Length: 213
View 1 (cartoon, rainbow, N blue to C red):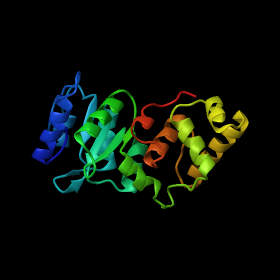
View 2 (cartoon, rainbow, N blue to C red):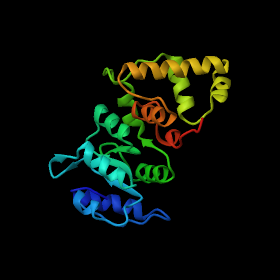
View 3 (tube, rainbow, N blue to C red):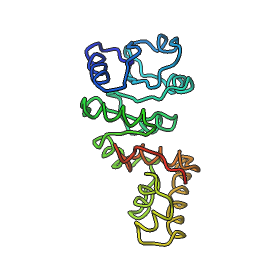
């Protein structure tokens, strides 16, 4: 747990310790102390604002490079920041303003299980964002992306949408092309999955796993 507000950190620790099979190995307000830990934690709950300074992308990358998954729990939750962190490989984002202990426990479970997480409230903000880095998708493209990124194979996407597999692939290809035009590389399914979460197309348990197709 990395947070510079003791009361908040205590609440995070209490929520995590109430979960079967979860151990809190350290609680700190220092990234230096976190970096000195051996071995690295399986999961780091990270506040993005420590002692008045915003945690940098490089500092987040350093945590990820040690093999830890990162779940951000922070009041800093602008669409651009969320997208930047998800692109780095952060596994989830829980805004402090609308987070609950129950949602936090669910997020921890999903992330420790290999999934990704955003809250519905944050997803609504992300999905309504009109910045150039968020491509404008048609209703059918959004549906194809949601189904495919949630783990379904193209054949299953086609069956759900009542179209051919060829047409389903065309929708996904269009989505990837629009992301490329926006300067975001989603050439593989993992990066497409992260983009779907970061843009609010997948939330909570719907963002719990990556497909292999």
